[in-house]
Image (cartoon, rainbow, N blue to C red; front, side, top):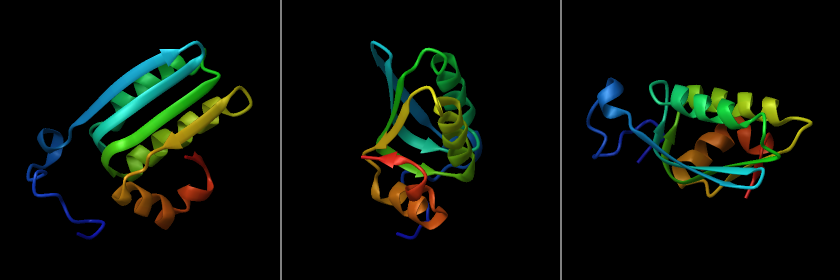
Length: 117
């Protein structure tokens, strides 16, 4: 499957084909968001909103992409905004990149911009 090929389970398009499950957790000033599904134009505002809610108190922000199937440029923009918000006040970690998401990070140079575990 290529980078721009949809999964068979992703036969829909638009908002109905875009789904993102965000599972937040908190441990002191460490906030973790486990993402499942697609981080794209339709779903990125939800993640951006959740990150904005906690970034003022966060000393560590972890984004767990183990179950993230796809990330678009809109999703990458949210990551850049989160990194800028955390700059000088704490640490941001992106972990457990799935193969398709890892490919996007490498092609865009984002693998050099973030602390990836």
